[in-house]
Every structure is written in C-alpha cells, then in structure tokens.
Length: 375
Image (cartoon, rainbow, N blue to C red; front, side, top):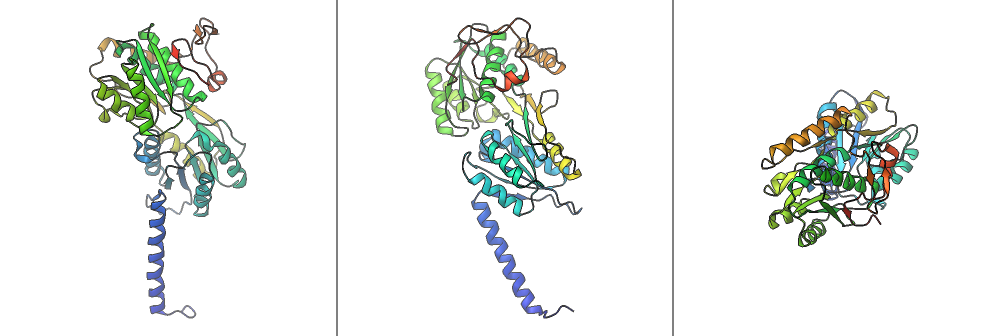
C-alpha cells in the first residue's frame, strides 16, 4: 500500500492533470507546435523534431519536408513533432529547439539556411542531441551534419521543358534570395532552356522572401507584363503559377507537383523527396552510430526528381528530357559542363570541363542568357 494514498484525492488529481495537459496542448497548437505519435511501444527513446521556416500548407518547401517527416515516422516508428513558420535570424528558433529537447526530443532537424549558425551553437550546447541542418554547409565532428540535394539536376531538365514552351523567347524567374543555392538553380535552369531553345533568355526578379504569396504573385505579374510567357520560380507558394494561369502563360513550379493549383499553366517541376534521407538520419540516431556528414544527394539517390511533364508537351521534347535524365543519373551528363560563360561573356568553364562541387556550392554569378543581378 502506498503511504498516504487516497482514492478520491487521486481521482481529483488525475482530472486536474488531464485539464492541464489539454490546456498545454491548446497553447502549443496556437503556437503552431504540433505533436504526432506513431504509437510505438518498443521502449525506444529516440524522438525527432522538425523546425520549418514556412507553413505546412504552403504546397511547397515546407509541405515537402512535412511529407518526409510523416514518411520517416511511419518507417522508423519514432515519435515526431514539428513547429512551423519559425523565422530565420530570431531567438524563436533556439527557444523552440530548447523546448523540444526539454520534452525529450533528441534528433533536431532544421529546414532553412538561416538556421545554420544557431544550430551549430546548439549542437555544441547539447552534445547528446543529433542536429541535422538542411541546405547549409557547416558541421562539427560529433553531432551536427548537413543535408541537401543536387536540385540543379532536375532544374536543368525543367529548363529544357520551359525552353521548348516559350514563344516570346523570354522566361520569367521569381526567386527568393541571391544565395548560391538559388543562383545555382537559376543557372542550371537557364542552361537547360538553352539546350532546347538557344536564343531564349531568363529574367530574374528577387522577392527577398521564401514565402509571401502576394509578393510572389506581384513579381510573376511584372515578368508577364514584360512579355514572359513561361514563369519559373524558387519560391514556396503557388502564387506565381496562379498568375501564369490567369495570363494564359505556362509555369514551372518547385518543391512539389503543384499542377492542381494551375492545371492549364503547369509544365513540370523539380521536386524533393526528403523521406528516405530522414529515415536514414533517424535510424542512425536510434542505433547510436550517427556520424556528421555533408550529404548532397542526387537524382540517382532519389532525393530530387522531375515531376511528370504536362501531357501537351511534344513527345519529342519529353523524349529528349528523359534521355537527359537517364544520362545524368548514369553520370554521363553534368548540367555544368563547359563551355560556359558568365553573363558578361567571361569564360567560366572551358569546353568539356565539369564544374566541381566547391565551385557549385559557392556560385555567385549568372550564366549567359540570364537577365538580372546577383547583388
């Protein structure tokens, strides 16, 4: 018998505890803090938490990550959690991560470039927690690694489709920030455009936001008003596609197959498949053998791919794109193979020369055929 145990008191306390838990969950939901559980009862104490820069309903970047989280939860049997719309460069990120760790989450995945320095500092502060950063380049030797994908591969393929679709010869590109990741994608896309339409140009507008449908839509409209008849993007919402649809133009989306949002405009999309990578990270953490690495996966790995191509694209173009895809996967075609000049006509790569990973990861120039500035 427990000392001082009283049945009625126990019941009252249980009721009060349930009320407190319900109230806490309500507060968390109001903060965009969502917990999901797979119901595992195997005693494993591994729990993974994800920090997102946008809302899970964006149909883009964050949506794709959340699909990966759900897949990883199903495949690994771990409990996962996420918090959405956490801005970069604020104290919010570290506060949320500490809250997760206090609740027993020992794998933290941050999914935006601007989280990088905070994650490195937190990894040093919590050496027993695994930290994995998406899209960055910093790491340590024990518990902090980074993950990304060679999105330039399907970007190049999507450019081939876009080049075949333009009649005006001007393709608009709505882009978030002038960082190497985005610039590399614009250049790969432009090289793909030139593979099917050598005289076409790609004009860039910077939005200075990852997710702002109003700004993205206005930027797309400005490009359409300049004569662009195809719109591409490195953004997280569907706004650019909706503007293209309204104008009778075509659209290359990003992150996921967004065809349902602008079905007449949609051409194709470079897309992410984060699930298998998240499974690998979580399983390594469960087994106690997580080792930080700089993972840069490819179409051959499956982390990046090209969405289905619209049915009205000429079959000869589809065949050309599929041949190029097979060649990239086989290692026979690299999008950044010379001769390549920058937009001022200066040679960047000689004929047959292939750009190395370091140069691609630090890319801060536009290739010939791009209208716009990287500064």
